[in-house]
Image (tube, rainbow, N blue to C red; front, top):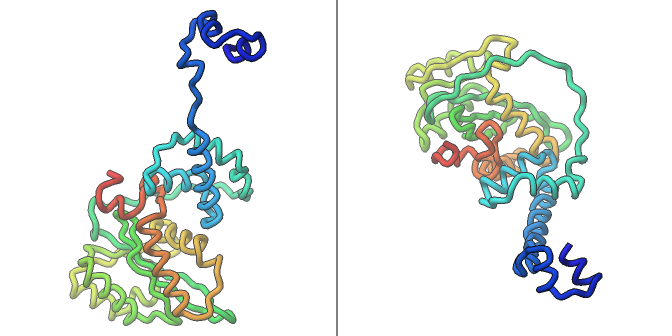
Length: 267
């Protein structure tokens, strides 16, 4: 209103402000948002290009919790929609399923680990298996071990490597695969004082933490890239595992990363 009096009626700024009973400071104020808006847009484009399966909440949690920006979520979402990033993925209709019973969240590290296998393929379609192991407390990825086959010996070797730097868990949750129910693994766990928690056959929801982690592995990188060899896949998975633990917001942890949960930032 004051600007129209100045520009259209030819009144001075001082007179216009007196007529409208506002201060000259108020008249001259201009919000300094343009630079921040450009920065927000830059980050949103960068994140959605690099992580094609990330939605708004993942992007916002990364900017807030990992990078430390304090922008209001409404402001970030407004720019997100202006860039049409909310239209990138059209979700498919899904059948309604009963919600599985929630797992108990451990109260500290090394109380319960979960492990499971995934199947994938490298160049020319040769099948490989990924052994994934996480700590249920903070969903931290402890290992992704990739081999053409995973007998019980290799499972034990991978667990021993983790225990060497992290300490042993009180229990490990797994399914009823032959590698997990083998006499060798059972004897090893007993000697270490580790309880093996077997889920019921046909009920993967009882191992929901590792199943959700497997989905993240598959959609974040496993289905997006082709690898010429196991060595290439293992090298990429090791780098991704660091990103997952240190930089990727986890919605089950309130948008914080596993390492932030470990060090009490997400408490």
